[in-house]
Length: 108
Image (cartoon, rainbow, N blue to C red; front, side, top):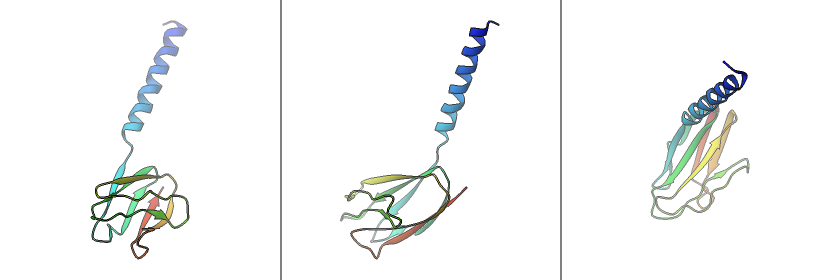
Protein backbone atom coordinates (compact mmCIF):
# COMPACT_ATOMS: atom_id res chain seq x y z
CA UNK A 1 0.00 0.00 0.00
CA UNK A 2 1.22 3.49 -0.74
CA UNK A 3 1.85 6.01 1.97
CA UNK A 4 -1.10 8.11 0.75
CA UNK A 5 -3.45 5.13 0.88
CA UNK A 6 -2.38 4.36 4.45
CA UNK A 7 -2.92 7.98 5.51
CA UNK A 8 -6.34 7.97 3.88
CA UNK A 9 -7.26 4.71 5.60
CA UNK A 10 -6.13 6.14 8.96
CA UNK A 11 -8.19 9.29 8.42
CA UNK A 12 -11.34 7.37 7.50
CA UNK A 13 -10.90 5.08 10.53
CA UNK A 14 -10.45 8.04 12.87
CA UNK A 15 -13.54 9.79 11.51
CA UNK A 16 -15.57 6.60 11.88
CA UNK A 17 -14.53 6.27 15.53
CA UNK A 18 -15.38 9.91 16.21
CA UNK A 19 -18.80 9.53 14.62
CA UNK A 20 -19.49 6.38 16.65
CA UNK A 21 -18.52 8.17 19.86
CA UNK A 22 -20.77 11.11 19.05
CA UNK A 23 -23.68 8.79 18.35
CA UNK A 24 -23.32 7.28 21.83
CA UNK A 25 -23.82 10.59 23.66
CA UNK A 26 -26.36 10.04 26.40
CA UNK A 27 -29.38 12.14 27.29
CA UNK A 28 -31.81 11.88 30.16
CA UNK A 29 -35.04 13.79 30.73
CA UNK A 30 -36.39 15.56 33.78
CA UNK A 31 -40.07 16.51 33.67
CA UNK A 32 -41.43 19.73 35.10
CA UNK A 33 -44.98 18.97 36.17
CA UNK A 34 -47.33 20.06 38.95
CA UNK A 35 -44.73 22.52 40.30
CA UNK A 36 -42.08 19.80 40.72
CA UNK A 37 -39.02 18.40 38.95
CA UNK A 38 -39.40 14.66 38.39
CA UNK A 39 -37.28 12.87 39.35
CA UNK A 40 -36.08 15.27 42.04
CA UNK A 41 -32.67 13.57 42.23
CA UNK A 42 -30.99 12.20 39.11
CA UNK A 43 -27.64 10.46 38.70
CA UNK A 44 -25.87 10.58 35.33
CA UNK A 45 -22.39 9.93 33.95
CA UNK A 46 -20.16 12.85 32.99
CA UNK A 47 -20.85 13.80 29.38
CA UNK A 48 -24.62 13.31 29.67
CA UNK A 49 -27.06 15.94 28.47
CA UNK A 50 -30.10 16.53 30.66
CA UNK A 51 -33.28 17.73 28.99
CA UNK A 52 -35.78 19.58 31.18
CA UNK A 53 -39.31 19.53 29.71
CA UNK A 54 -42.09 21.77 31.07
CA UNK A 55 -45.44 19.96 31.16
CA UNK A 56 -47.14 22.60 33.34
CA UNK A 57 -49.56 25.19 31.97
CA UNK A 58 -47.43 28.04 33.30
CA UNK A 59 -43.81 29.01 32.58
CA UNK A 60 -40.87 27.66 34.55
CA UNK A 61 -37.12 27.93 34.14
CA UNK A 62 -34.05 26.05 35.29
CA UNK A 63 -31.26 27.74 37.26
CA UNK A 64 -28.12 25.98 38.47
CA UNK A 65 -27.41 27.11 42.03
CA UNK A 66 -23.71 27.57 41.22
CA UNK A 67 -24.71 30.24 38.68
CA UNK A 68 -23.22 28.42 35.67
CA UNK A 69 -26.47 28.00 33.73
CA UNK A 70 -29.93 29.52 33.47
CA UNK A 71 -32.63 28.66 30.94
CA UNK A 72 -35.08 31.08 29.44
CA UNK A 73 -38.68 30.83 30.63
CA UNK A 74 -40.10 27.55 29.32
CA UNK A 75 -43.71 27.55 28.19
CA UNK A 76 -45.79 24.36 28.06
CA UNK A 77 -43.87 21.57 26.28
CA UNK A 78 -40.76 23.72 25.82
CA UNK A 79 -37.46 22.18 26.79
CA UNK A 80 -33.96 23.16 27.83
CA UNK A 81 -30.86 20.97 27.49
CA UNK A 82 -27.71 21.26 29.57
CA UNK A 83 -24.56 19.15 29.19
CA UNK A 84 -23.08 17.95 32.48
CA UNK A 85 -19.49 17.24 31.53
CA UNK A 86 -17.79 17.28 34.95
CA UNK A 87 -18.40 15.05 37.98
CA UNK A 88 -20.04 16.64 41.00
CA UNK A 89 -23.31 17.48 42.70
CA UNK A 90 -25.39 20.13 40.92
CA UNK A 91 -28.36 21.68 42.71
CA UNK A 92 -30.91 23.48 40.56
CA UNK A 93 -34.21 25.29 41.06
CA UNK A 94 -36.92 27.18 39.19
CA UNK A 95 -36.06 30.87 39.22
CA UNK A 96 -39.75 31.74 38.96
CA UNK A 97 -40.83 29.37 41.75
CA UNK A 98 -37.79 28.88 44.04
CA UNK A 99 -39.52 26.24 46.14
CA UNK A 100 -39.09 23.90 43.15
CA UNK A 101 -35.69 22.22 43.60
CA UNK A 102 -33.74 19.28 42.27
CA UNK A 103 -30.30 17.75 42.20
CA UNK A 104 -28.14 16.09 39.57
CA UNK A 105 -25.28 13.88 40.71
CA UNK A 106 -22.69 13.47 37.96
CA UNK A 107 -20.35 10.49 38.25
CA UNK A 108 -17.05 10.04 36.35
